[in-house]
Length: 314
Length: 291
Image (cartoon, rainbow over all chains, first blue to last red; front, side, top):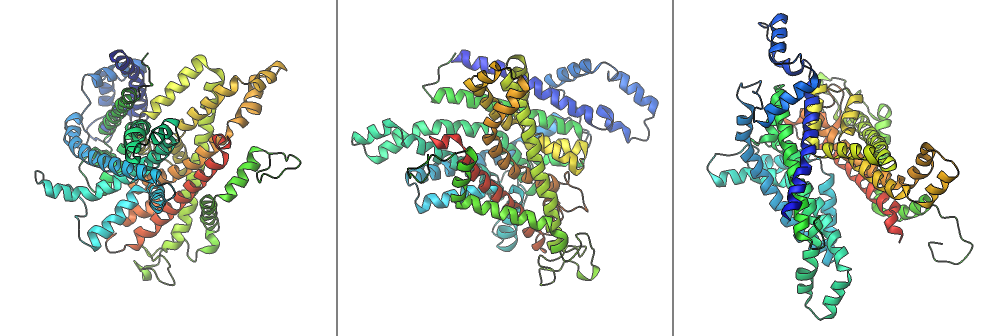
């Protein structure tokens, strides 16, 4: 098991290197390249630029630049934000908790909803409930997330006045923060809830057709025991895997959700950095979120191995 | 062989004939196709259907709510929202469809080369696919669009850039099986070259999943375009797209709700219908369904 995890961990290194090459290529594609920030400064002459270019090693061959840049990144030097002058790493760190709170809450809501509804609609296949869940899931995976957010704001905040339109609430006052969290959570969990619910339903249906389920029923076990002890455990294996794999998509959704609801997380930081043309920030967020995706894929792999006794470690 | 179970002369059953029959029985998928055709043709016929030019400013009718003259109301420049929504459909639908097509072509090429040639080519191509898959798609397109400030044509490439990996994996998988099949061996034995084997034998036999994936990708591409334009890094005004109409509407949503409701409904219905179509095609074409 330890060997298996270590092997997979080593396997993520080429992925991380690949991601860093793509991010470095984007950096080269920025008009003005790494020196873009100095181009608009009237006090910096062409001569200064040439000097800076030499000082920063930008006249070196591209692969030397890449290795230097990668080394700096690996040691935690992520550069300074163009817009605020503060270290990028520090600014991102202040935004991580809000994103984790929103993603964690949405993940929990989507998990509870999709497993409960997916299992129940598989057990009661073709019932009115099953039909309702299918329609809901279909709407969920087709909904433009940001527009759903706007419509919720219009209905629940502007017209009914039940919930605050946007923002995080007062730090430290949990009930206030939770009230602000309701709509963003609904918006962010909608797509995943729909997708996972369809997936759970299909997985449970497949397991219910297996021979060992028929055996369990033939033994005279209660239907409840058959479903929860025999069917559910097997059918949740692929569901757990897809959940871990979907974390990348959940982060994509968080970017949009945070922007619509002015939620002070990494996603809204990303969008602000675009308006501020803050390249070091953009690239750092891209790198960081990609690494998070790679690690969550690794987690999915390991979980699959842990949950499914049929998987043999090699 | 006959689907209705009657005995008789065996009819020639092709994948697509079977698929068409199954598809026609699927009411949701048929409804999706009809809605999509309606949306597409109304966008195509926008010059005939719209009573106003999309960018025609009317200072005497600023911010009017929906009325008989302006079905969806007007915006802060007095532009007719209905006309803009129709013209926006041309932009949003064609970007959605074309990005999915480009993504399908790129994915098929990558997957086919990897699956057919194997070895180093496969290793390199599939690792590259894994790398792109491990970057969160939306942040990647947002940053790319912010850097390249894309024209509509470039935007198609940018959106296709995050959508080809699934197809590449599918096609590679199909090719791995097909490569070992007897009909490919037979084709090689009579002297067919690689290109001929790929184009004539392997590709047609792995086409069904590609068609399904490409259809479902249209929905994703429509959403991606609308998100990018909503955030201000996609289609730039004054050209209307459903996404950038919502960009303008967001700040005045409370007082002028019609501006934010209608464009979103167009996005929702086009994505719903594409997804229904894709699901129907999957059921109709999927080989696993034929056991």
